Amino acid sequence: AQSVTQPDIHITVSEGASLELRCNYSYGATPYLFWYVQSPGQGLQLLLKYFSGDTLVQGIKGFEAEFKRSQSSFNLRKPSVHWSDAAEYFCAVSTDSWGKFQFGAGTQVVVTP
Amino acid sequence: GAVVSQHPSWVICKSGTSVKIECRSLDFQATTMFWYRQFPKQSLMLMATSNEGSKATYEQGVEKDKFLINHASLTLSTLTVTSAHPEDSSFYICSVGGKNIQYFGAGTRLSVL
Image 1 (cartoon, rainbow over the protein chains, first blue to last red):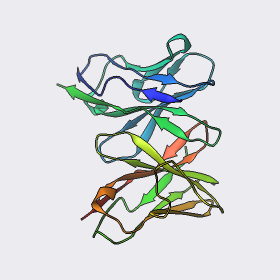
Image 2: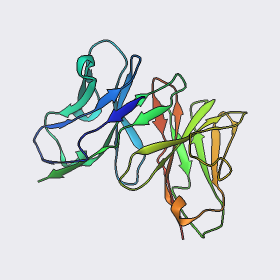
Image 3: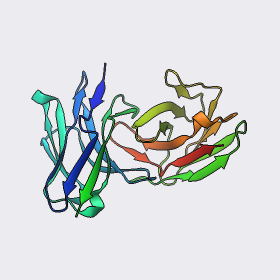
Image 4: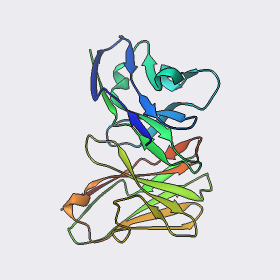
């Protein structure tokens, strides 16, 4: 069965420090992978996506993610976090040709001064 | 990207009443839209796939008679929560797009008293 796992429910990071959010997937075919960010009470904003090609993907707001097929992972990184990066982050897999998405449980990021 | 508008953004209703939530795709003709539900501190769970001009496809465990979906045009899908109860209180989010990307509305917070 297809699944998306985000092992870290909650991460606290100091402003200016680096951030890495983990995502592992289980999917039979070539996955379409996404990272979305959600601020409180808001919808989801796309940070980046991976379909094929270069396994290191650049996104908005200084985020990047690396696809590692051997580890079934698609971890999100940012070299230096800003207070505005405090939010909930969701990893997702597109599971069919129509666009049905499966989401991970999410990782809450707290940024401390 | 596509602009997806949801209305209302927040609704409070009495138990037993029905509530309609609109999802509009402002610049993208969507034959398919998706409805998700998100409980506090949890991930998004797909409720149903809304198909323009035909019946919606519901995920397992979602009551089709309770969550009525109408997709009468390429730009509008509605979700009606019938005979709402406090346990239906949640954040409802719609999306449009395809396998390559999904654009999400800002969500509707439903509170049933």
